[in-house]
Structures are given as C-alpha cells and as structure tokens.
Image 1 (spheres, rainbow, N blue to C red):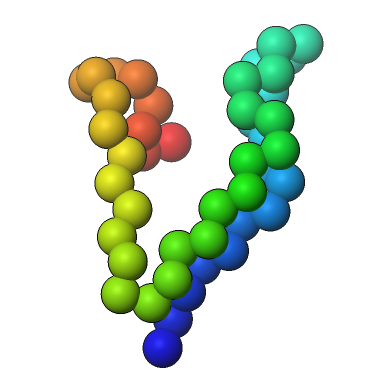
Image 2 (cartoon, one colour):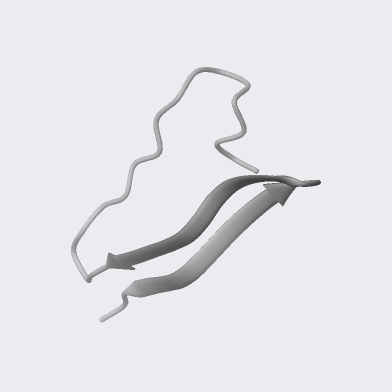
Length: 44
C-alpha cells in the first residue's frame, strides 16, 4: 500500500544545526508517534 521514506533530513536555526542526516523508513502498517512537551514544535 503506502509507505514513507525520508533521507538525509536536516533542520537548522541560523548557524545552529538541530537535526543532521535523519533517515527514516515507515512501512505499510507501521505507526510513527512524535512525543514531547507542549509547545516544543511537534506540529511544525
């Protein structure tokens, strides 16, 4: 059916690199859950 593949994802805030080289595979039938405190940017 459907899957999701992310390769070499990064996030920067100016000169500060928050995420470097994230690779992620979510296969059909799997779930991904993002957890963290309120206001930490999960939906952005």
